[in-house]
Image (cartoon, rainbow, N blue to C red; front, side, top):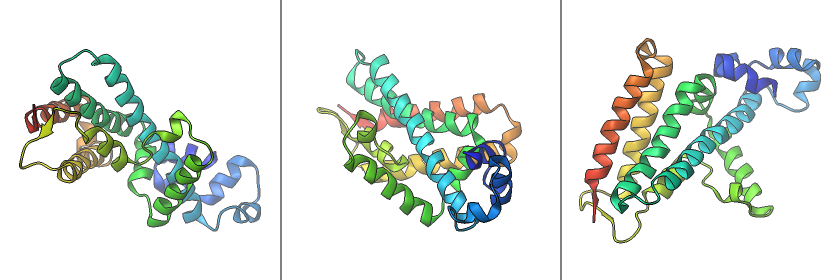
Length: 206
């Protein structure tokens, strides 16, 4: 998809209908039969990019569940939660253009994405279709602690989700669009993830 290619190299500002039509060899008039202007094209790109982001998080979680399958429950749970966070940050740093589109997703895009993923689930369940399909869903899925673990009395899943989303989004935006993008991003990401690991671990009770 030309729009995805444009977003990958230039972020949301690069997603222009005229350039997308030029790359695909169709006329602008023909494109307008499929997309009602640039915003509709950007919505479609955002839907797909958001899918790639959640896929990256889900895949990181799957790997962590295998890698830490025999670890002590508190350690295993911490590493699984951290894996979702690492998947988010790695995607943002590896694909800043697509992340920028995800970060600028419109209300229309969110509604389109929810309809798209809901339709996929209703058309026959598959392993992929059963996975969480939005960033909040991925985080909530790993924040549900297995017995006998529990969160500290002053911690709730909703609170943890908001803090994680804020931290991941804030760092990723700083690292890809703000002055932090000239820093050693791997080192900075490692620092953030290290702090998150400590916080998560000490927020879990046996």
